[in-house]
Amino acid sequence: MKRGLCAVVLCLALLMFPLRALSAETGSPIPLIFDTDIGNDCDDVLALGMIHSLQTRNRCRLVAVTITKDHDQCAPFVDAVNTFYGRGEIPIGVCRSGVTPQQSRFTTLVSEKQGDGDRYPHDLRSGRDAAEAVAVLRRALAAEVDGSVVIVQVGFSTNLVNLLKSGADDISPLAGRELVLRKVRLVSVMAGAFALINGQPHHEYNVVEDLVAAQTLAREWPTEIVYSGFEIGLAVPYPAVSIEQDYAYVSHHPLSESYVLYEPPPHNRPTWDLTSVLYAVFPDRGYFGLSPQGTVSVNEKGLTTFVAGANGQHRYLTLTADQQVRVTEALVQLCTEPPQQVRR
Image (cartoon, rainbow, N blue to C red):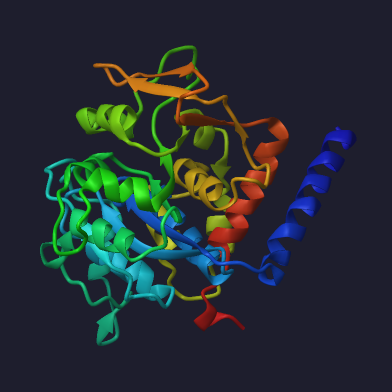
């Protein structure tokens, strides 16, 4: 028992050094696109807050957010979170696909008032006023250096597949596939399952809700994809005690309030989407293991299959018990970091 506790303490101590040392590192931040079904689960909100903390640390630069949940509150909610972190200018795009149009449990926060204004200020009032996701994606990619962009997809594959199908336009003379090949370095995807769950194959939500898009992405996307399967986020639950204690530096915080509205604590919610963000920004920090190179396919029932092969462009994340400890602490530290404007 004492030996296990010492190992945990040692892991946490080792973790804190690179986190604290980030500000001393040099180099350009990664241009990052966040493609999300925000509104369907609270892990998307935690992942977005985490991206903002990583941007404050100069590790990434959020160049666009595109949304695959088709509800008009989702885009204003993203704008409210971005504004909370001092970045209300980030472009937001939506798809009008009809996929998961149901009311969210927590995007209603954009309607909450405080005094004479919004509890969470935001300029974008409705998804009906937001730009089309494909245009936002094309504009974001066209503006970046070749081979530099990382896309974190933590919802359905709808927007990225529509991007592949897009043609040349006044944004770029390149069709979608060629634009992706030129600009994108990596897609970090939360989708699929690469281990049995309770002894059974798992039909993962992000895959089955737009099955054709998930199949098309796996089959046709021309750059590297790393999948974080359902089993990864399930193994790294976000501690409820952090929700209860670590966000009290402000009276109202969109991350903790979204978590509570989604499912009131105490509960430790899996961190599915957060794991894809962590890998995307820190692929070489040893937070996760990686499968060999190979190819992922998605069958007609939504099950993901991986076949190893030297010519494949896909991998999936793996996780050891020691890595679980490191990942959990990293996620908590990044999610709970105060925005610059409210730091003391």
